[in-house]
Amino acid sequence: MHFIQEMIKKWEIPREDKNEFYLSVDKININRGKYTSFMFTFMILVLILGSYLGNETGIYKNPYYIDYIGMYSFMLFFMILAFHKFLFMEKSTQKSHKEIWILGDIIILLILAWSVGMSLMDQRTSGQIIIYMIAVVSMAFTQIIPPIHFFFELLFAQILFVGLLPLFQKNETSAFMNAINSFGFVCIAWAISCMRFKKQIEDFQLKKLLNKKNDELTQANRELEYLSKIDGMTGIYNRHSLDCILDEAVKRCRQEEEELSLLMIDIDDFKIINDSYGHQIGDNCIKRIGSVLHEIMQKWNCICARYGGDEFVIILEAYHMDKIQQLMKEIEQRLNKLSIYIPEQNCRIVVSVSMGIFTKIPEKEEGKDYISQVDVSLYAEKRRKKGYIG
Image (cartoon, rainbow, N blue to C red; front, side, top):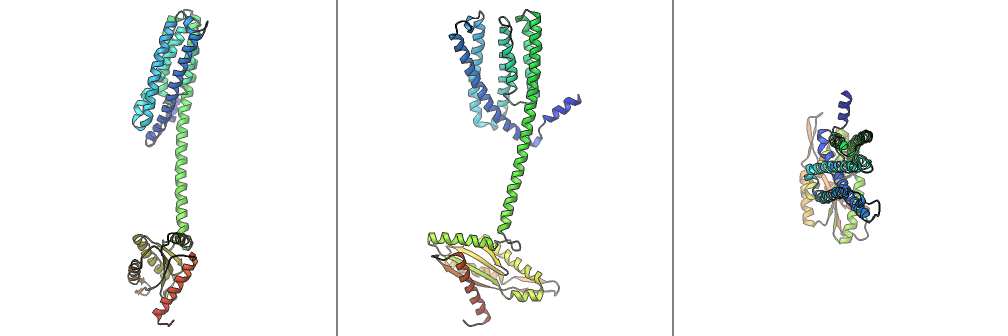
């Protein structure tokens, strides 16, 4: 009893995976049901035609040929119907779960019952049960169904065969041997079905685990790629990303003959802040400015990057000057209002920034040329603010 319980546990699917597992099985069963019904139809047609053309061995030479023709015709009709039904269900697998299982069970039961009937009729002539044995083992390889289902289907077929066998096989020894042989093949078929169903569960769980690991790896790679492009302190693009993005922007604007503008922002007297209040306050200042620029990047659909130290760059493609001026005004208003709290001295310092701008339709310039020109513009602005001439 304990062995049976342990075996049944191996066939159990976690509740959260049941729908996904049986959907995957449904797709397999539809394809196999389609091929099974098609091959059965083809086989029966070949048998009927071959028997008709045969001289001595065809079923038409058998005194019970009408029974055989009736069995072949019935199975031929049903298999053609089953083939068309599987074709129809293939288009809506998710909605046809019950129908797929019911049709699969019906096909297995009918093939087993048909093979029982054919082997029973063979008892009157050859005494063989080869058709029944082949059908029993073949059904273990066609549909993927829970072993408990297949157990009752095999049990039905075996009871039917053993119960009717004495009516067709008058030799008691032959009947006994046929019953024993068929029982052995039924056990083999059920064992194969159990192993295949268990293997299907293991393959599904392994595939699910691999998909999960692949998703985790993909997500980790995305995060690493993101982190490689982002400045760790400010959360905006880093210098490497700036160089790559700027080069691409230059190519696009050159091709489309659009103006490319660069803004460079520098914190005023940043060295004095670091020397007077410490690098932690300086870092906090850079973080606050990076946060503001990140918001501006999302609002204005532009690219903001930390160029290095206390310098930041904004890339603007195909922006008109009036729009650039609005952006510069917003940046100036927001950044020049920033105040940094100094806990050790219980005071706040107000941050101010300087900005330089360079705008041009790219001709032969590269990204580094834009950086050089906007850098010149920035330091001209810084000298102007400090009252220097030239």
